[in-house]
Image 1 (tube, rainbow, N blue to C red):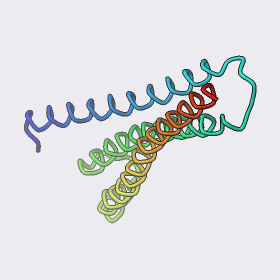
Image 2 (tube, one colour):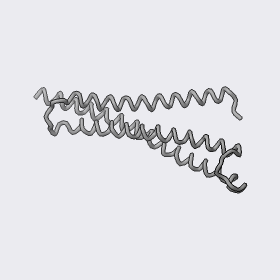
Image 3 (tube, one colour):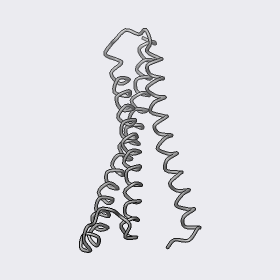
Length: 148
């Protein structure tokens, strides 16, 4: 079994990861809101494409962050099921063979979900940065257009 220090470190790590995901979600949401507020009443034109793609990127980032959080919640529940299976308290296995196989099956599901979590985390971050770069490009184009 794990000692209290290991458990505390895990809890702090988990809380830190959650804060990071929510920070990125908030940044993407704020970017979308800010872009929409800045273009309120503006006429559509071709020079706004970078801004449209920035908003799209932020939307992708927000979606990926939501999916990431959802998968993390699912994996936490799956880990609880794994603990029940390892303790012999899981209600599903009907035979000793099934009871022996259940932790293996659950661990495989966890590994699969961990890969998906990593993919969504990467998409969330990259799409947020892409949106920021596209926003900066739009802003430079907007300033250039006003100087002509």
